[in-house]
Amino acid sequence: MLNDRFIVYPETVKSSGVTDTRTNEMNAVTHVYDLVRGKMVVTSEEYRYDNDIPLHYDHGHVLRLALKAEREEGKK
Image (cartoon, rainbow, N blue to C red):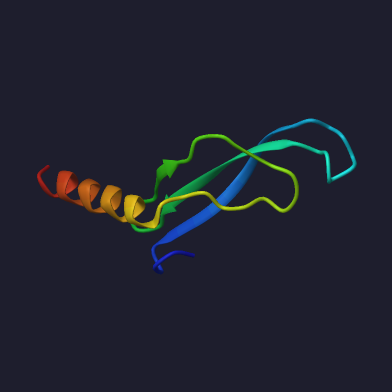
C-alpha cells in the first residue's frame, strides 16, 4: 500500500526459464492501482531482475498523476 490509496505491485512479464536464480534473468513491470478511482494509474517501463522482484516507481509521479486525474474528473 502507498498512502492508504494506492496498491503498488510488480508483475513478471518475461522469464528466461533458467531455474538457477543467480542467472535467471526475468523482466517485470510495476503497476500502481488507485483504490479511490478504481483504475490503474501507471505501469512502469519493463525492467530486469534476477531474484525477488523489486518495485520500480516514482512516488511523486504517482501522486501527480492522481491529482491530475482528480482535477480532470472534477471538470466533467
